[in-house]
Length: 330
Image 1 (tube, rainbow, N blue to C red):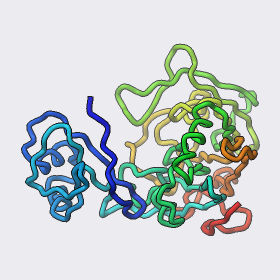
Image 2 (image 1 turned 120 degrees about the horizontal axis):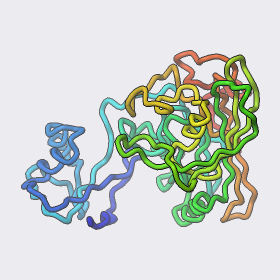
Image 3 (image 1 turned 90 degrees about the vertical axis):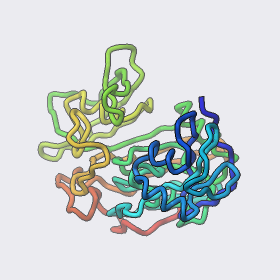
């Protein structure tokens, strides 16, 4: 088993911390040979350019040359970014900020942390740059396809206490979704099932027989023709739980490219047809201050109003104030 990377003093770049990859025993005479084979997304020429620019570091935090030897057991440290990283159609909102927490309201298609094609445009990197908070870190995640609230810890020493709330299910989370209206299906209702990763496709999960490990409470809020707005309360937090549970009821969420069947590969975005799922509200007792915390998204699912969005509004209606870009502190 590879050892965890040593902590080295590398600064943030554009709000992005350095990533690390462990070098196992293998036939790589140079650092360039290893990176080109094990992390091929950039290609050999791309890694050579980064190494020549001094953008790959050893465990001593010194830049490595392309021809540097590559012994097993060391870690190579580098910054994840892409020259052709796509721009996103909407910005995040900051709905709350104090000395302990930042709560952000993110749009569809924005990942919480650097992933895939997105690094500088991840919510974490954008907030670090915007707020000047290098130590900011998320205490939970939501899917890149989902819009809505994400909570961040400002101080590293309290991050564990906030993460424990989510691990121990001491947080109430409320989502909204738009899907087909089925009058014969009674609400409110509860859906429980066993979810496991799909063995053939890493980016999706599936329902399987066995003891339930996922539980969602569901309520129908309003009907708009053939569609309805639903409130979803996930009691557990399995991957893609809400999307799977809605699909299992014959109510796949509008814009869902994965459930009940995969319509296109992960990372292929249709800006005009975002997933109609919103992390609407979150509430908990603050483990640091003892306060009752409650935050609400100001976003509105466009399909909840009975229409699909225009290409430039990413599936969301303006907030009640009409402002979709200005931050506020709560």
